[in-house]
Length: 144
Length: 162
Image (cartoon, rainbow over all chains, first blue to last red; front, side, top):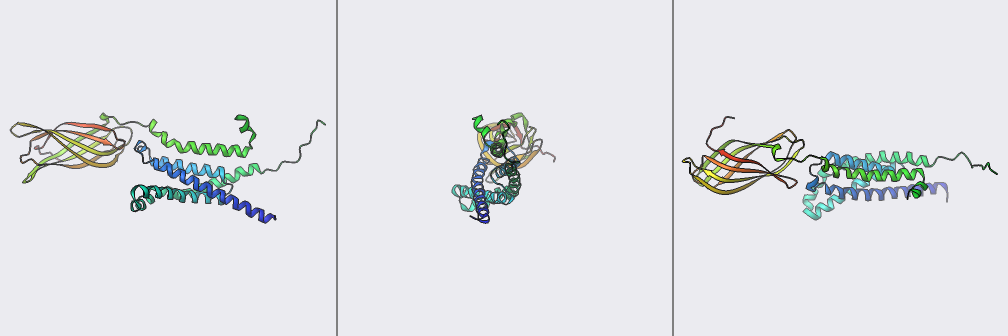
């Protein structure tokens, strides 16, 4: 397999992984966002949830993606996945008409996920660099 | 377990750390209520003003302006106000015990140190307006708890200046 093909395959694998990360992350964050509506947490400022979500997107993309592009892809897919999770839940519970009205208002925070993904992807790339440092050469045994 | 952790590469260790950190960060807001304050009865002050009993051909309406002051250290998420009128005192000093309930949905947040004002009309089919009523007002918070913030007479005849 040529170097170019190998590279393309690696890029495709990275994109697939980023997409899977985005889908799972978005669904998980959507499920958590539904918990915010429970009255027990009604006194918690929404900004705290937004900051926590953004930090989580940043950290997860930093951990599981290795570039700005894949980070961006992961952030965008997480936003779409979370939006669809919320839309699905609200449609099932309250009807599609109310869901279409409510979910966009509840989803403003999703607009910042791509940026968090980009930053996370950059951090992920720097982490990957620490792994790809070449060793100075074979270690010679001196006890022989 | 520690040995297994020590065997993985540095970058993998950083990744594991980041994922664990992300999960912890996500749960921080859900721990927030444990450290937040709870609003006590004494911290919500309610005052009733501009009360007026308007008697028409089909009964009376008691109108009033209600102000709730939040002196707690945290926001008060008010769901509704529950009114219970339990005694009517007529101009000739005769009294009548009643049990009249009404609820007004508010759905607002009163910030710490702030106040909230609303007008309320208590509609009841009485042909003669009492000069005073004894009323309990309970604040229902969004977390389901309730605080009785007012229990006393409301004069319906005194002209009050704004």
